Length: 371
Image (cartoon, rainbow, N blue to C red):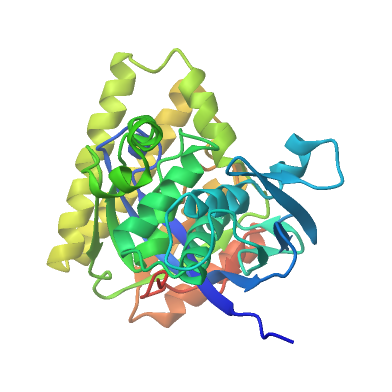
């Protein structure tokens, strides 16, 4: 019996620090941090043609067959429904399979297993599971096929795979899962990147500059500790971002003011991180919270829930700074506090518990996804 080759890759989750909503528009900056909760993807060869996928983020043990470069489910008439729970895994497999490889065909026979630490009993924490599973799947399938993409090439492949599903997403989660640590990020034009890949091929899309895109590591905050609280209310980033896109607010003076103010805030926060200016960073986190609150007031988007508000107020009460992380509407919030004052952190956790906010035992992940 031939021993089947196995490849394992993992990618960390993420938290937004500043720049939410504005970063969706190409070229606007944001700050993210990767966290030490991971999605692990294992790829093993199969004797039988097609792909078998088992995921604790979706259906287990589903079987797929290749048709014209795409995967179609076996044994079900509801192809769209079958893809829904595994959309990011499937798109990542299809994207990497479209690349010429040193090992295997363009229709590889694979068994793909997904294990996520970014949720609890089926409930997502809001730590970027879609981005992490896409990055980990791209890396695992690429390595299995004998490919050695660079960090940026893995990011581009994962972003293209995600944009096939939802081109509105900024890709910040994908960048954090790829590079790890604290990260300054600017989103490319996803529609233009997709069109480039479709019209000129994946190889061209991986080598041609993407307007607006930039990603670089930042130093960790000097003298500050990161605390993460979970509201217990899952939120849909895709739904919230899509809702904002549909609003008449876009293109108004208020919209332009939000983009300008948020961009200025993110730039100031990046400068504070690079200078080790902890008090200035705390002030920019507070400013980012105020900008999100103003956006919420103007368009009634539902960014701030009662628990997210309580999370932020608790941090302020003990001398820290806090804000929702990501699109809001539930999920997580972050707080930065004096790293040399453990009693401050203990008091924050007590206040969070009283407000129904669950402290998550997560820390920044220094490393991102490996190729």
